[in-house]
Every structure is written in C-alpha cells, then in structure tokens.
Amino acid sequence: MSDSETSELMTTEQVAAVLNRPTGTLRQWRSLGKGPRGWFRIEGRVAYPRTEVDRYLEEAKASSPHPAPAQP
Image (tube, rainbow, N blue to C red):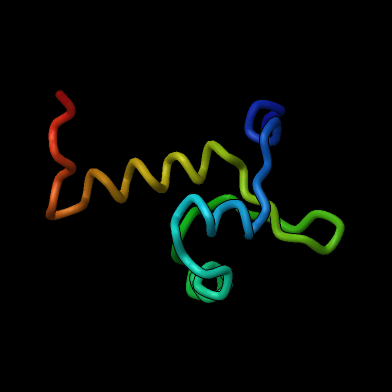
C-alpha cells in the first residue's frame, strides 16, 4: 500500500457515517467481501483508506438504477 493510500485512514464509525449505514452492516460486509475494499487491521482496529471509500461510492453511484438529479 502506498503512502498516499494510507495518508487518510478512516475508522469503521467514520465510514458508516459517510455511507449512512450502521457499523454492524460494515462488519457484515467485511465478512461477506462486500463494501469498500482495502480495509485492514491496525493495532486491533479496522481502518479503511479514504481512497477506497471514495472509489466504493463512485462505483455505487455509477451502478445505481436511479441516477442523481443534475445539479443546476
């Protein structure tokens, strides 16, 4: 993992807030291989690189059957 990928790490709680999902959902997704990729444990805590969370959001938006309304 490069320095740029670890320059901003997010906790499970932070990712849950960004995705508007309970932390338990993220735990379940990790066990199922779903959700943002690239997570790892550091000192016993799960960390997500911000770049992977952003990538997950972009992929989710691109595959959504209901595109977001155009911004004026």
